[in-house]
Image (cartoon, rainbow, N blue to C red; front, side, top):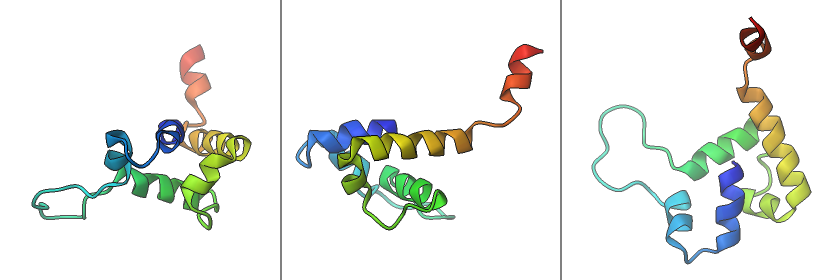
Length: 87
């Protein structure tokens, strides 16, 4: 999600932005559909109940975006990491 902030600031014409929001090409194998990076960002925002706004509009408010990134990152870190590091 931190990377998405930088990419959104680059603009729509850059290749990196197109990779972030573009659809994967090629034939899809059996199973679930391929996900774009943008889909993962949207899922993370829905997980913290902030999926109402578009993520690009959220990136423009830097303080709010950083707060959301920190909340999402804290959800990903297991609670017992500190115990693992100290043992």
